[in-house]
Length: 394
Image 1 (cartoon, helix red, strand yellow):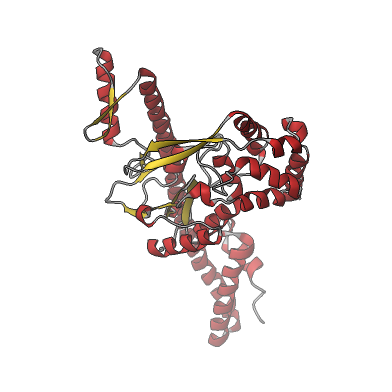
Image 2 (cartoon, rainbow, N blue to C red; image 1 turned 120 degrees about the vertical axis):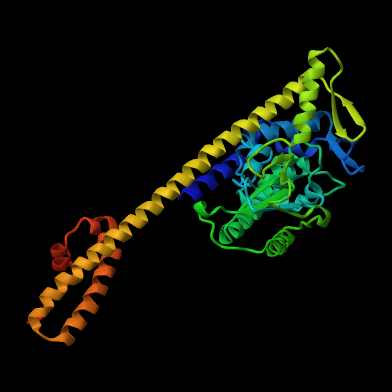
């Protein structure tokens, strides 16, 4: 029933799109798909090509983003470009783990095709015509997919890949893993024992399964960016070290301290990104880095409190299990004596053995299914004999 209500909500959202956004189907069909190219350097020395919308197209995309796309469902595993989530939420899912698998999707945005985008809107109950018009506005005509650089591409990719995230999350749950995704960066790690993790799985098997699932949705893995980070290595997820808890790397913290020192003595601040490459840093950028570090520290403290509480709960549960088992064994011993006394009335060793065997088994089954260990521990032997076994034969 809840799913039906949500589906009706998304259907009404598509039906009321002209009223909500002020954009008619004619406006969507007549908007000019005008993009400008911009190349920015990447860490490996290559160039990243951004396709940035111009003029009216940018206004239409921003309108759809703020009034429509923000209301459509995104899977909980998607941590990127979702309100209330970010890189810290993506990283803290994988802290203090024996290994972390990092997977990168090749050409993530451009591989998310226009057909898949339109089909996803049709699944919400939108008309086929309106779905195609919205997909035309958010996708690039020559790429035939989402353009990297458009404001709508990240959130639309999350919306389109809801089913893929669901399949990957189910696979992770089945094998006691934790899964999260930040745009094209996927991360998997084993679930801790106190959180239900018990199955040992080979990381190479996980990578093969991820590759097969992504292939169903038209994606390919980048083999040069697929890594298995062990506990004895530095585990970095979206730029955050997660070996013992979320933290910036030592190099970044050192550079920030140096930048603060240069600010205090009145010199130009710089942030070394590559050995020998000094990039000037403004005071506002330094404040941004410090605010980001504060967010990471707060997340680290929250996670420490959570892990401490989980461990305390695990210790308390183990203590209760041990105590109940001890009381159970004591009660069973008393019960054996009581049954033996009543069975002696028959003056038959064979009947005594049969009664002891059957009634002790009946007592255990009864306690497991109906009484419960805690209630059983508070009951006396006479009450147990009366409730858990029939009267002795005469």
